[in-house]
Image (tube, rainbow, N blue to C red; front, side):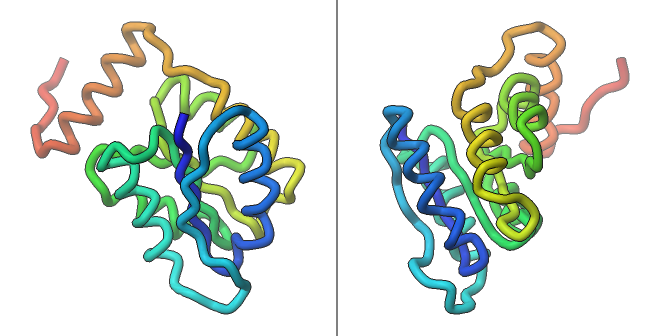
Length: 153
């Protein structure tokens, strides 16, 4: 699997151990992050990851900034990208299983390297659920994304 990763200056210290985890799990890394802790704007890096997902260059993505909030907002602006901000392993597993999230956002100033590794590991190892209720809900999200109003049921 190809995993795109992008980070701003706040996410830089967390990136190296996560790249190591991705590669040791047998996946290819596409690195779109900054290589220093010199302040930069997170939207540029989160957008690169989102575009890589949209364009089929990557299967999954990881965006890292101070809180993960800004990067998740940016990633979710790109059609076909479903980014979940996760601060624990359970939500990362549910983001993949129930919501078919294809990008995970992590806050480097919120979680430490060990917890980030556990969160990412769960995200990478979880497959989307084929349960009808989850499939139906994901289809509704896609309809909304396409600008189609949902009908009452």
